[in-house]
Length: 154
Ligand SMILES: [Zn+2]
Figure 1 (cartoon, rainbow, N blue to C red):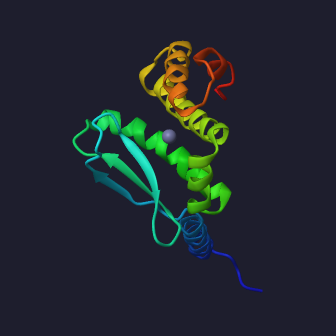
Figure 2: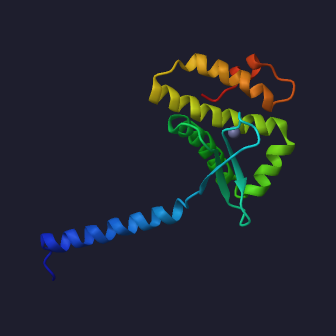
Figure 3: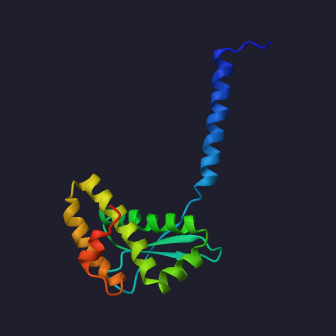
């Protein structure tokens, strides 16, 4: 029987740790982030699909890093939604054509932003939800800000 010294134990611990890191790196395939000049100065971010049907995050050039942080939180939620659906292109087609789906997806992304702003900046969640609901009316068809606010998943 081999005797287990501290050195052997640490060696195996290192090998196991490297294995876990490798598995995690494969599972969490990275999403590229590209800074672009959007046609509208009000647009801060967007997720597009590359030729291999993988998401790419676009962020507006020249915005302060403090604002880009929250744009990334929002767009990363869309990347999670795309990963869950399995296809970037199918997901974006449904996003364009189905207003209820679009609103649901945006509500989740706005909530990710709200939760981050409350945690990082100590902002008022109720106020942020009200503002988000007003902004979300532009993603919906015929829903009022009050109806949207009542259904926000945060
Ligand atoms: Zn969005």
